Image (cartoon, rainbow, N blue to C red; front, side, top):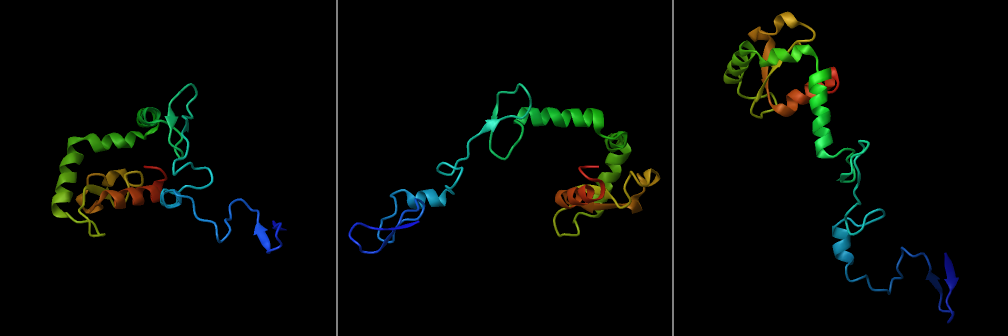
Length: 157
């Protein structure tokens, strides 16, 4: 929006977020810019909001839905009630020994990182009979294993 100033020297910008060329920047301008201040933020901080679990009074950072305690509770409930029974296989002594053997024989993931997990080439879901067969296992780092599992099965298997 433009209007002629009283002295007739030309237009003056009346849009509040645009400063005239001759106006000095506020004293804290550089600090605000470096902290990411902008719409919806006050000096780089977005306000906290209540946890989405009904009755929970905890305030959580913007971008999160649940407080830490409720996220941990959800994970516990998922592991107890929804996680498939085939995951009990990974707690057996046979699997633990074979997993250690795989990591000793293949200490590096294909991406170049240190292998930390033994991964089934054909998943336990597809071929449960190959669960303890060494030729069906490969060493992978955590991120590669998680990415592959999430792509194949959705969530974590």
